[in-house]
Length: 593
Image (cartoon, rainbow, N blue to C red; front, top):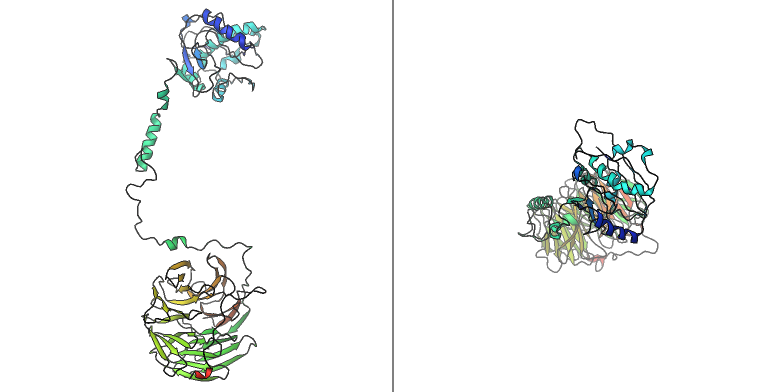
């Protein structure tokens, strides 16, 4: 049977409390006491009458403070004497009829009453509440039988409420059966972290030992990590694991960064300024059929003819036409823009005076077609299909002054540095050779990082030892090299075949033209390698490109037989070019013969 719970905060001052405690300790009978230890405040305690004592031993005490623990104020005493909750709130006298409990367990045959919740109003100034969990547990204790008590049974006097309060709680504690267990189990579950003890305070050393669940968790974690519990986490014994296959750190970390913000992005027109027809242009990746002179004239080779288009006047003139048994495989303007060199399929190299429209000389020496050429003052370097590179001195009759044999397949890229000290060559053997002009017996650096033919070569105009190279359809990468040390500085995966590269003389940017599959031109910022813009330029792959002498416009020729002009590197007002001026041929032009 259950008894009502009475919570009555006394209003006795602190000094009177201490005197009452001394008197109650002398008058209260000696009863077995179990202590419910709390882990928080040491100055206050809650006292609940114990349901563990037998009914025959319960004797009503004359004092409401007779069961206060003598040893420590933080103990909760479980006894048979009355119970009183001491606080600073307003007293709420509640008393009910006392009933005797014959057994600590509720009969199984009797139906379980409906649960109700008793909410005790709390005052923020109450200091008897040791922790929130304990107070909430007391509020939510199952006291179903209290609701059936009559309100008329409550006495009006404060003394009767205080005298009977502990007795009511002592009998009501036996009827608390929240989960079907005993009253002792219900109290333990209500108080959460509160534990019952038989012999007083727990030993301090036992509290430092981890629980069995903690030890089991630490063992399982150490076993999963393949480590000992006492070992250091950042200590590798044996050595750190190695990758099963080599890792290219440049490919991992030298990736293009995020696209530049809108505030720093230049406005670039995505439509061409001008479009010209280029009928019968040869669709061959290894040829070089387009070039722009320092005199603002564009030379383009269409099968057996070379045409000159003037960017100033817009006029088009045919310079010359070859015989029927050959065709033009490359064109290149001299540094001063006065002469055009043309390479033929039969290995012949011709030099033409554009103003007069006359051929100055023909040079032989290549066994196969000449697909690429490059000027360096009075030297003309030519590369053929066999992999041979010849330096021609156009001032003398015996023009063959040097032969470079660093490639085993067709040479498709040749580019002199602006100071004439370095020559870069690329071939269908996937090699990039960097030659020192002072020693042409062998290449200074040979790079094998590309996995396709290397046609695109470009020297940086504002950093002379920086070289950019681009690979074909099986490579699709742009690599940046230090020509002094031969070290690779950066790389870009363009996602398409790289057919040409041109540095901007006004901005720290480089433009690449692509073949399969995008057929687009892209502008990259250096050294961040952020892509500024990508323009779908042609319907078919872009084969050739050249930059205007002012460094602002790029001309592109494609297999779709269109010649387009793009305003990519617009110069700001008052801005000067970073690169040096084009170098002219040394000596009078009459020396070319």
